[in-house]
Length: 166
Image (cartoon, rainbow, N blue to C red; front, side):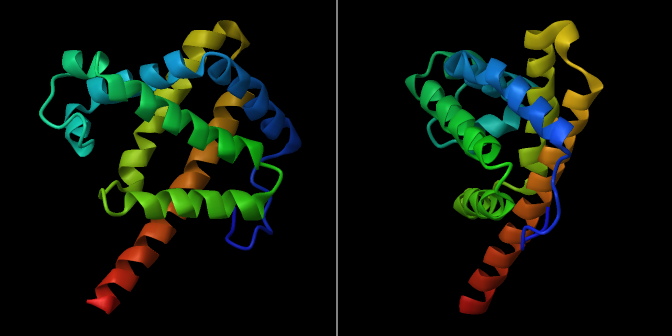
């Protein structure tokens, strides 16, 4: 995926696989969003402290925190905006860049965003079971890799602008 939207991100088959598999996440968005965060915080306990609402809490405390649902839904809706625009690469690029820019102040890097890739794919595999194919895995990997690349470009640009301004 390029900034000018000239490169096709996914093949038609891959785009269909992403949209098809996305429905299993979307159909139970709150539960699946919470699963994403619980897995994230289980694998990367320090990530808890990146969220001001959860800073200093244990995983068990976070699991019952009223703001977990809000954060979970926010991530799922953000991903939905990406999925909804797979066929409009220019808009998709701008959505990813906006999301990356919004995370600069919280110092969330593209590396940390990529923590979500295996977590997300694992959750899809749990839900889909044998229906999860190599096409699904490849498509989601390509999508997350494109998001990472754009995320890094945007964060580097924002940091550079902040450095020049100071």
